[in-house]
Length: 377
Image 1 (cartoon, rainbow, N blue to C red):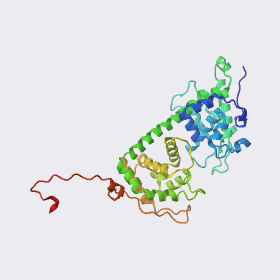
Image 2 (image 1 turned 180 degrees about the horizontal axis):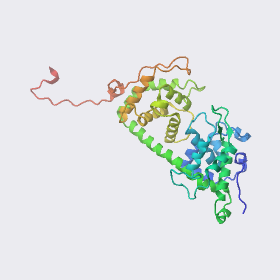
Image 3 (image 1 turned 90 degrees about the vertical axis):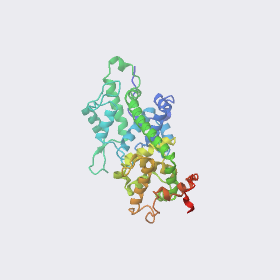
Image 4 (image 1 turned 180 degrees about the vertical axis):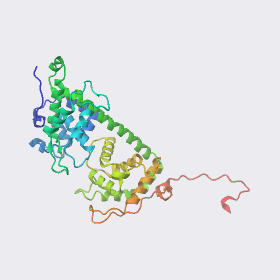
């Protein structure tokens, strides 16, 4: 029985791809896998395909243009890149490649058990050899190190898959019709599910955080009382866009300007994954635009995830976050707009918030002792 292998996976003419691609259907049918791939699949600018060249900016079309194996490889590859730098990194280092292979159960992992049904088929020297053969020199990097681009990663996975099949019993090997489909099913899909499940856990956590924040009238009073300041901030960091829209890139500039990254709150990659999880909460994956409502939601979530000055509880965390913005608001020497960012300080005292004052219920009249003149004196 002849084995099929996509040796030139990046050059496959997808117009001839079987519509019943089992891997594609499986990914489409599992919501978290579909969301995960929607979040991390990226356009491959290294191929010369005119069909792919038409897909710039079209995430849905890009996914439809790929085979199931391509989607899985592409999404996993770019997920690992975002763990280091969601902006500038386009190639995978040797160290990252090793981590990915260990996570997939393809390399021995002394720190943990093999996650799959088979023992790790690769040795470290074989993995390094595959990387060396397919890596290219990153001339932009300071140290001029070699990195593996997505096209090289496609080929590497085909190579690894063939090596994995070669370690099997002959009878088992003879029953495999499609090496890539078997390899993805046994190794890459389980990794994809674990990564998607990890994100799903964060989604649940952030959803609970936001529900608690929205359900607290004091927090919402502070949000309403500072709406103008929040709008000013959002509008200012939308000014660099041709369409005057906030993107993750300008959000990360805001976070850097106000000291939120990388020291006071989190790193830029962590911020990226928080934003992507919040996209999932809102029912979609990977949107370029960050609306004002989503910006406020991200801010509330960061306030609880990374509390300042030992704050505990939703109200105290939100107050401490606003106070932090007040502390750093004059540190901006902007290149985004025509002048520095200036706005009135955020209100952190509930007694100063008009919305809270209006929400205060009328207290019932006090039962006064006949001999106590009370407020009539």
